[in-house]
Length: 251
Length: 332
Image (tube, rainbow over all chains, first blue to last red; front, side, top):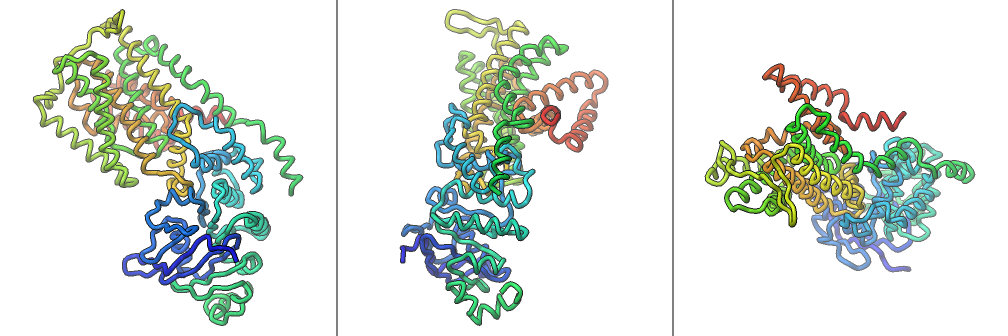
């Protein structure tokens, strides 16, 4: 077994009196696809926000490649190799598709120099174009992002995270609002992406998760209910009761 | 799937329509702007109006860097304009400073003030940001009102004049209206070139990204707070520069230049011309000051008419005069 790229130890989060997460402990191994599932309000989003640095845990520690992430500002996460996508499409609407990805790539370059042109970084443009090509948006480079169809915006969403070339990619419901055809394309894309990076994703589409992931975490009422392979999770009676059983068609 | 992609690719390489137009305009915007400013005194009814357009145009361009490109609505930019003007006036009047030294001092003080105000205001967002900038600028206003031995209080700062601009080897008669216009225009042109540089640079790309989506810009790895502060200070420096020019032009600094009314004017001009477009704020300043010039001949309630026009713009042409022209031209 490979080393854990990310270790979460006894992580909890409270908002005032509300306990959103408590006592989550898990290791994420390099190269795996891990899915996080759970009913609405189970704490999936909170957990995801903690993993991506958007929220600080109230208790517990987060280690990425052995380094404690406490006190690391959110904008440094991507520089260390953790990038995320968002559940609600979170792009730069009035910039072109190319500029959306190019500006994300530019974060890894000195940017306070006002004597260069942003277009002087040809390599960034090439990199952005290559990433757009890989998600199937190569032909839409000059379109303003707000004019893309929903599925294409989802793809752009992923492209923005991907151009950082993260070792750990966090995907928050990558197929939210997608039809079956678009979902199939997204699954194919995630499989390609997983060949050289670790992926964590939150999803609702059970059939997709069970086919795609190496491992599944089930959250319920802010606690880790189960942790195992898709087969183990499917067989787990507790999980069936709180989650899968609600929707036999998917399970 | 892959064959479809390849077909689409073939046509993707040629930027068409909007993109191509934006590209060309971006390359020529500084020379074209300077050409327009060169012609201004010959088109407008008075040279005084032309100089005002230059100065307020520069304020609005500086403000636009923050409002139109970074997406931060400040209601306190009069503080920087006023700080530049007062510092220049005091440097010349009380310390007998050379015009150039006085200008540098004015810009520097405006810059320092914007660092302080920026650090305090950027901790807040949205409407709270606007309110903090408003409150801080009013603090500056009342300080100037109270420190009347330095600032002349409510009478404004008087008793300094710049009649010649001396350079090593030659000097310029600053009392000749046309000479004065072109002297100020050279400074404004340099500032415009600087703003264009900033917008073309990678930094320009970052502030646009923050305007479009702050959360995402942070997730992309940008230090949003530091970038906002830098944009705030750059915009404060430009407004301060406009203030120093205004002081040298008028030979007085009215207390009103620090008042929130002036901050409101700056916002109005920027919106009227087109926030987020390079030359829009200048067009806004031109439109606003021309309306004032014309309507104030008819009635002392000219602000009523300008107000109605402004509301119509906000409702029906939210991109402003220049912004609307550009998108109309691009879509043809």
